[in-house]
Length: 141
Image 1 (cartoon, rainbow, N blue to C red):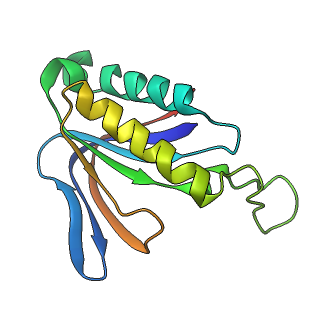
Image 2: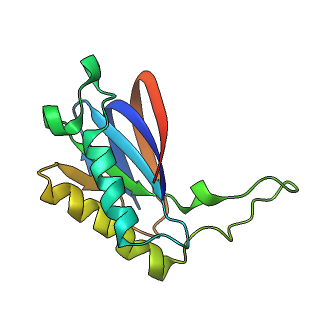
């Protein structure tokens, strides 16, 4: 499982003209990709890592500050571009495997007390964000 995590001052996800998830204060935008070999344990570890990731101001985390997270499923993170010009998606989990694991990450974050907004799985989404810094990291478990 991997995530591109950006520190943001605000972020939102729109589907068919409707805002389905948004944070309007400093927090994290998480683009989350699921590998076909990932398990519930990977989801648990990812949630733990995201909640405690110390990349907010003064090396704080969502856990220590209560800052929100916007989690957006992003299968394209597993696009393999090593050969040719067209990405291969063979490493990305199929939707029926990925969706429960994305939901597990969100649920685990919420159980830890995190405020979490989400995109809509398999939807055509428009993601808007105001990056803070910019400060972006790749998280893998």
